[in-house]
Length: 305
Image 1 (cartoon, helix red, strand yellow):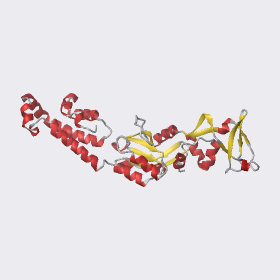
Image 2: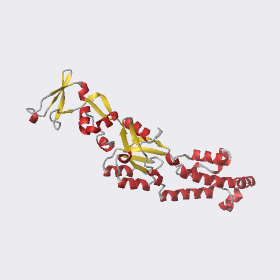
Image 3: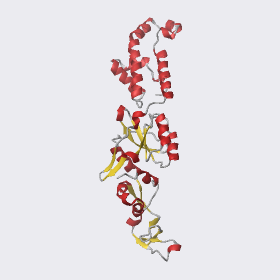
């Protein structure tokens, strides 16, 4: 059975009785019930009439119990209903339960996250040899989905966004920025043991936009010009360098060039990794000390890190 994710998120701010939720979702009520949490000290404001479901009865306290009364224009046709706390207790969508179920369905890992306006964090995806932070967007309209997408510009912060349904403009915009988008309605189902989903692997077709690629190439070109104290840096630098410094530069130059290429490749394949991790991996790969390598490759040469 298809899980009514879009309809459920449409009522994410509702605080109503269980019978209200049941009337709203009908046969799908059992599938959403695990994601409804009771409110310890809040009751619903309205209660549906058992004889006339379209009529909303107003709940009032009546001694130790509650009374649901119809509007004045229906008072002669609809009877009052005496209710207990269990009948009127408010229930609402528990986003933490929803998050845990989505983590399990898509095999995501809990991880530290950064707050993003309009989104709530789900977990980290390690698929496709990448590390993408996965968020969910509660928007159900194309306009709100696009507004949420416009706020997401960095694939290192928001690598993938789950939407209730497919929103073409939002999805195209995110893809152009290297961010994957998944429509839950197309890949999520509910069974007695919980959510079942199959990732559509939309991140396979996502890559850094050309602007970011040019920025990366420019950054690495800067490193190439500043990291090696050799003849390419001009006569002034040559004259200032000691003979020992020149000798060490010539000795390490092949290693440094290889480290630069290694860091270039590592950054492209692991965009969520920090500079220190990339430096450590390069040092291990080349069998060099981290401190030695750090003398020639500095974090300041990587403005985006």
